[in-house]
Image (tube, rainbow, N blue to C red; front, side, top):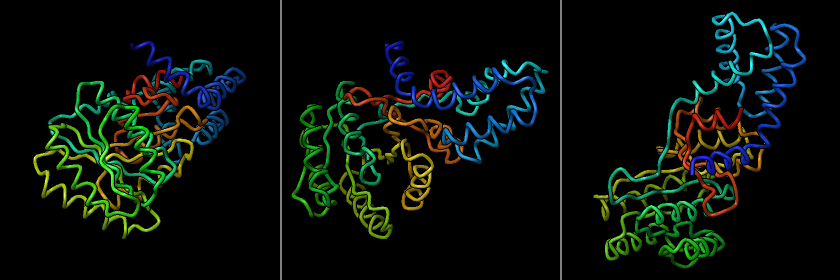
Length: 303
């Protein structure tokens, strides 16, 4: 199981590895000394892997310090120091979507096109395979495609879907889903929500209304909010996270399409600048390719 996951992670990060690690290796192989010019070249590579300017500066500062401490003079040894610095920054966090207490409500937010619906389907499948009874609420009622797509994923995952017609009140869908969850003795309710970030006021009102329904009708349930971000959008994903966190508290991030980008360094940037845990990462198209995030394995696979 471990090697299968690790291989998937390595394959999923192959574009980032080519963009980041191989370029670092090439520069270090051609360097004669460890000087400012070398650090500047490393800085440029880290920024183009979308680690972000602020996080890159921090990495370079820590790298300089480590190299001084270890009295390293050989440029080829810099790579292992860089890996250590990144691994230290990522920490030993091992994320899990296993609920701490039942019942649980997972609200999923994120702009259109980031892979929100697909992530919900994969997450529902994962939780069902772990022995949980899951119900999904199609509360993104502003896109007919979102409801249809969620139905396809629910059928594929073998979980129940509660839906209304397009344009219905999202809070009404959640209300019906709560009643269904209670009647069918489900222990996890996953709510899809509309991600209209361009109109924060509407989004706040809608999430506020859903929250009030949850508090009134399902107060015994533990609630968490997960934000879906698309790794291929790079620093834009970090900006989205900042904007969403102004609207509501975010408990964790689902980072999709890591296998489709050379900018997987975004994971390091998110961890360092936002301090919101990355809970799940998408490293492929398959139903089981949404994996729980392990910081140490990520650093290992990247280098």
